[in-house]
Image (cartoon, rainbow, N blue to C red):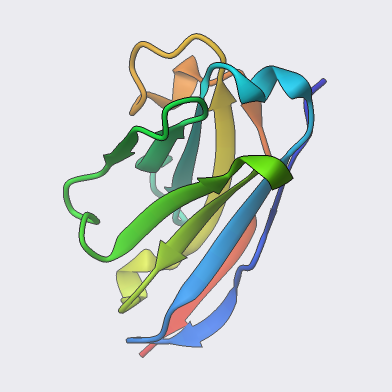
Length: 125
């Protein structure tokens, strides 16, 4: 089992910013794989937010979120961040990080191998 621990969620107002963190343990992440962020709002399917390759730092974003959200990694801490700016009510969801050890479709949740427990983000207007 490869644990992933998310943190940084909370209750904010529209227009505010939050930075989520995902701490990953296990040396396997250092050389390959993709770490992605997904979110799931009540009554909706889990949707792709962003992803980053662990080795090369290549980033991927949901088209609708590009420009407001930024994904980054800090290899020394085995941690990936999701900076979320100008938050909107529609961003309210549980945010999950996940690892895909053999990435081919980085936007497909079912391709990911390990998941964190999620962190709640609530944006009030």
